Image 1 (tube, rainbow, N blue to C red):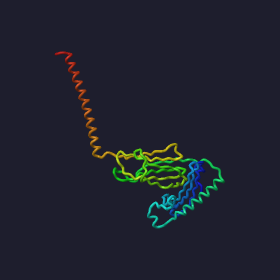
Image 2: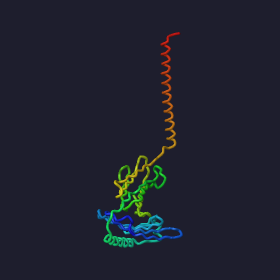
Image 3: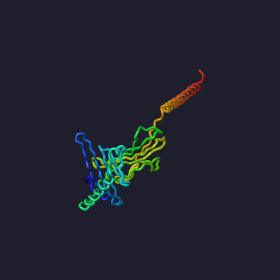
Length: 255
């Protein structure tokens, strides 16, 4: 089945969907075969993913020719041969070549992504955590996600999911960055997509409230400073009034 958004001049893609539904429980197991080729870049690629109710079960790493289970425990109960995915994608490529011969090419609609950045767990300074960059509702499935720490690109320790298909034929993707929150550090998730006029930066930095003792001390100091200023002003006013009264008495002379 085609992606439903036309065939863009720069990207040709073909999706094959197979859905198995349990009627009573309404659970859905989805197999997605994706083959795509960027004509202007002379690049091609593909993806083979199984998901259950929107959550990835496994995908096939086409470079390493191996099945990657989302949870390693799944692989203890069942198996999937990576060669089968390669055969599926070869069939998709052939199918797309036939469609290209029979159909006209038209510019597809680019859907820019929505981006959010948040932590996996409640954030505490010094406690290891994971930053998550959630990129949603974009099409086509060509996107570049990078992380910046204090303005410098991070190259190690990043994990990305495959492209996850949404019900409206757009895609979503997650990028994970393990980190240790430290006061003063800040992070940016940089997203590049054909639907964006320029790279999108989503900023994140730890919002750390002052400890209760520091907050109390700050409040007491502020109140003390305010009282001191009021006292100085009131004292100045009284001194000026007293000087004026003395001047008036001196001007009238003795009774």
